[in-house]
Length: 76
Image (cartoon, rainbow, N blue to C red):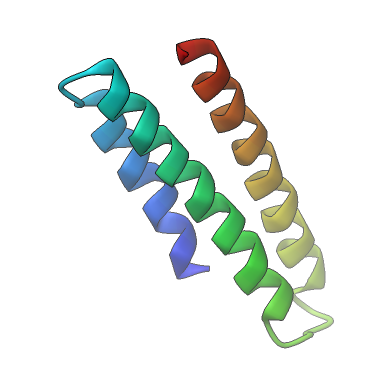
């Protein structure tokens, strides 16, 4: 779950970018971090108590990937 923190950090960096190209690259990095977060969540040990939380985090990461993908497309 810690890998999810990088999504926001990279997006903040994107908002402080010096050029449009730099902005797009940093948003792409944020999207890749969301994808990595999903990967690690899927690999995590099954725990019945935390399964619903895990599924919510996976859905949230997928939504972030879609949002970040849309930002990249609209920024081109």
